[in-house]
Length: 209
Image 1 (cartoon, rainbow, N blue to C red):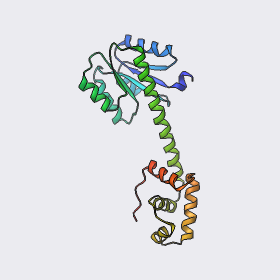
Image 2 (spheres, rainbow, N blue to C red; image 1 turned 30 degrees about the vertical axis):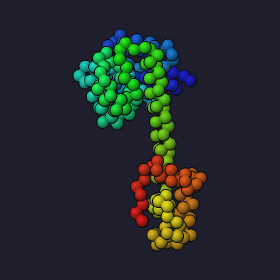
Image 3 (cartoon, rainbow, N blue to C red; image 1 turned 90 degrees about the horizontal axis):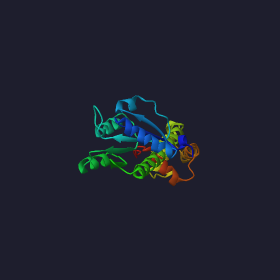
């Protein structure tokens, strides 16, 4: 796997020597990285669309790492975070992990501990991106349905029979069967169970019977 394909590690630390040290370590194992002195520099940067993670110092000028973690979430930037700090304590660690951090490492930490956390974070982001991509494909297929087909799909996944759907919509059972066939084909669903799983992933509201 090339460095680009493996992903990008972003480093935010106001200590130049720490940034250089981590970047040197990552380069030695073939990982691509970008480093920033402040959280705002990171936010202003153009980030490549690939699996990534953030190595974030807790003590940053202007805003601490935990507050920056919240700012990222508020800005819709979902990236696995590994905190590093020279002044960690248990409450701080618990807060970071509860807010979704992958790891909380206290300096000086072993290179291997950091690399293990980074690989775990990149794997987590890779899986998350695959799920998002799959849901985006489902959303595209769902949007290709007509309004009536969406209605029929809603009733089907709620467990209603064709006869019941026909009664609900004031149409014939044959018409419902045709719509149902269109739904299965457009959604590329092989079975009723698969269609239900798709509806769950799309978080469709339940149909009103």
